[in-house]
Length: 121
Image 1 (spheres, rainbow, N blue to C red):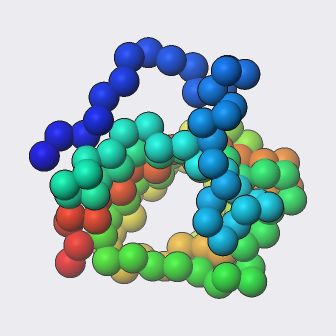
Image 2 (cartoon, rainbow, N blue to C red):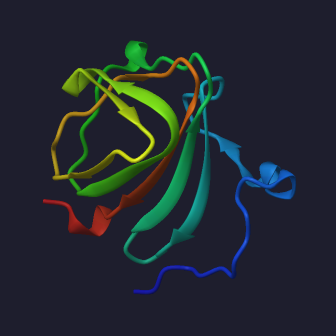
Image 3 (cartoon, rainbow, N blue to C red):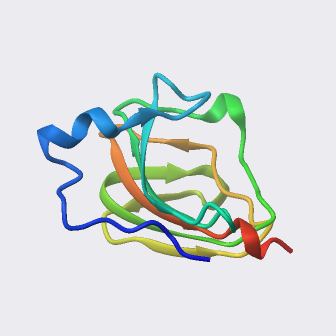
């Protein structure tokens, strides 16, 4: 099991903007950029960019059966499940089944996410 690799590149450069894609179901609120993925296990590293004013309250909170790690790179994001504003520098290692969200942001936010679907349970 090997994740894809890439040489150095700036994901925030104007040239990289075309590689960001709308998050399915959140097309007007968030974009994502997969940085690496293991096609066999499903493990991935991606960036999610919540646009200013995004609010996922209509979708409720979410859980999944696998662990994930998140790191707030920039901006701020409110996590209703924890009644907490996450700001640049916040980190979490979520166990399988942990409720998180819904989320909202006033100014926008970029989140680094590492997920491990192969470690469900």
